[in-house]
Length: 113
Length: 112
Image 1 (tube, helix red, strand yellow):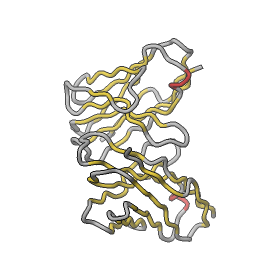
Image 2 (cartoon, rainbow over the protein chains, first blue to last red):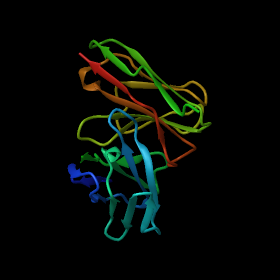
Image 3 (cartoon, one colour):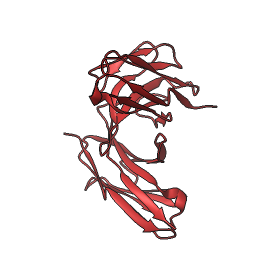
Image 4 (cartoon, rainbow over the protein chains, first blue to last red):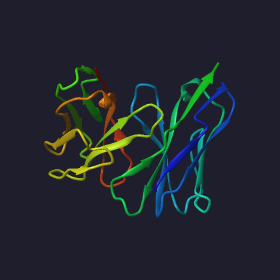
């Protein structure tokens, strides 16, 4: 069964610190992987998209990595800011499914001043 | 550009009542989606519309119906609401297929 699992479920860090969020997936055949950011009370917003051949992609202070062999991805946030407080969701699409994405449950990140 | 808009933002229903959630996008996207989000779970696809005039079931379609009114608008109807349908509902759109999806602000629905 196609699944996406994220860890940790929640994380609290101090402003200015770095953190790394993890995503493991069992989706096959793999097409691409996205990270979304969801602020409280809002819809998710795309941060990055990675295909099979990409192993690192950056978007400002966010850096996503992908290891297609071990089916793992991580999202690293550098020099965290209060505005980074949100849920971060890993989403994987399969090659044989044109319209359906497999969504992880998300990691809830809280940045404390 | 408003992006994806949803109405209403909040709704409380009694068991057995019906209602329609409205969604519109102004990005000229072909594909539109309805999801529900429950605590501790990933978003689950209810229905999607690959293009104007077509609709298909997603992962959890039971108890829901949809209408793709035109290219801009995609509505979700609950014919007889049940407490298990208490959730946050998101509408999304994409150019097509599994392109990046753009989400509306959500509708928070409570069924008593």
